[in-house]
Length: 182
Length: 182
DNA sequence: TTAAAGTTTCAGTAATTTCTGAAACTTTAA
DNA sequence: TTAAAGTTTCAGAAATTACTGAAACTTTAA
Image 1 (cartoon, rainbow over the protein chains, first blue to last red):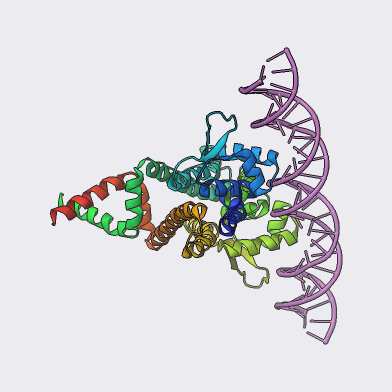
Image 2 (cartoon, each protein chain N blue to C red):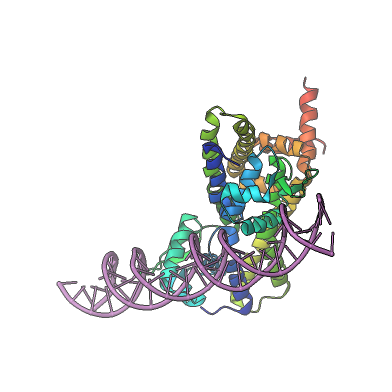
């Protein structure tokens, strides 16, 4: 598959950003390419287009599947696997967000949970324990919030985002209403 | 500085998670240690406690300063620099969040902005351009939303988080009010 | 002004992560 | 059942990133 310069620069950019987004260079390029491709792409095409080894593509596919970012498709009379993004851009963003939350917060949350269980043994631990508690509570709130947002309909979420800082005002409104009911 | 086993395991955990959070192992350990330390810590103490070289500590301090996660303190009659976290846990989390948003989204946003300016040159680019537009709009909304949330008082933000999926209901309420004003 | 204490820098080394290419394995059409 | 086409795996090579230790530099108390 031949890419126009503009597409190529987008795909390469995805490669460079890859590690910041949580994967490696070639995995970044792969998802970038799949997103801008109108038709599903086979593993061989990925390798040829990106100039990377077939083995590497295979690893990358596994990785993207573990992130739930791609889906396999079959073309009748063709036994190759063809890949395409698993859903809309919004869906992909949601998945990356969720998956990263799991990888970046859950392990710490569980360490802190068990660490907080027992009593601090001395002055040093007392202070530390306090801080750990704060981190724990923060992570827990964020986790809870994230999961609740995930369960909202995308439509509502988009409304909420558009509202921006306006939520502040809505919150005030709510308070007023509740108070006037007293 | 001698750490109790519990503190040590927390600090080492921060090291392991470091790369997921956006820095490297030793930088992770350093901020972990600073957070659980009641008193400011000197560069030498960091090196000794973590068993890493003095040079490495120096690099790490620079890195943490670029994230605005630590502050320097001086003790009268002592010319060493002492370091401590720059603010509460909440402040630190906010900074990491903001800094990562910058590093992970801004470069892509600016690439997409310029890429979208000119007309698609062919069928392939037409489809790709559409997708890039979707990504652009998503990133832009998130960026805007994030900056607005940052400007809300921490108190309000915490309320919002506690509200969780409840925001959905508040949004509905708002709609009803607006409609009844028509 | 000096020298001791403290700090920074950086070239080279070590550790880790990513990638290749070839071999093993699987599938299916004939 | 065979062999050609397609796919996966994995040991080692390459590239990247992190770290050390020593030397250069800076500060300040005497």
